Length: 428
Image (cartoon, rainbow, N blue to C red):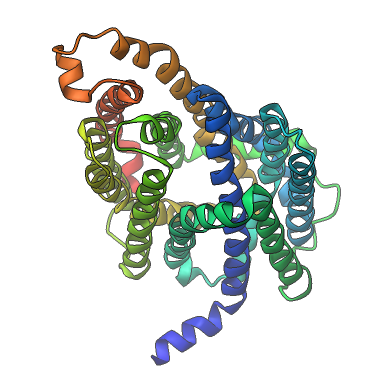
């Protein structure tokens, strides 16, 4: 108990920042969840719904390589406050369009693109701010705590979003989102102090020169570079999965909005449990081995069960097996970056990491939506009732997405086995 109290005192600034930002994240996640359901109900297209995430990630990927260079030069607190304010303003615009009955899906694409751009600049500033307010000995714990908040949001998002949608409609969800933003904004602006370097706010080196320094660092640190490439390949597979997931659950026999919420809740509870375990586990001898093994286990279980399962129980079991080890993977990856990248380079390196590691996400979302609508669903629709594919994956809408999950299982396993042979990542 004494150690716990000491840890809380040493981490109190981070904990306050983490709690309020996580609360704001819950509001944003509820809005995103409600919009996915709204867009799919409007268009019935996996591709149209997937483009919501494409529009969010595209500016994030394109501009991330420069965002970290800007972040290293700008005041971290001011950067976070401005980016949050612009994102909140877009939410207000969406609320006005919704209230006027003229909200169209293309409006959401534009709004998501602006939010993605703000997140591009805010994310490296937030990472550096965390490093500055947190003692080094807690770096592994912070990775676990971040996953705790993410998993709790995953648990609460479908429950609260469904409840608020039922009681007050989409407008009520958006109002709750704005309330959580206000709480986080006031706390960051008036309560939390983030140490700043004297060099921040000055002109400093040119933007392109600063970005090149981040690239040069990764060229020198080949182990970190290859870990980023590994996660980039995994993100491609995972984002195809994310695009196909709601289309399958909402369309498949036995699926519905309530079942989608149930499976997402199980995934959230699973990542919460995994986060607690990751927060208290000792540092492993090889963090890279943990990362590889966790992803291999995840890829070889969940996708197969989602593909072959015909009931919410099997889909929930797949969600549990697929996500239980992910927090442990994430905490070790986070610790590698914080421990091995110098603090004055972290903004640059994180931004280059974001461009390299996450550029496959919009590609994967687009590819997933396209493959479901244009390839796998037509393939399954053309099968006879006694074909092997129909016996494995069923028939009707959603069976094509199930077939795609089966293909994704082998793609994910192949990526993990390939990078397990990469000797450059084993130094960590």
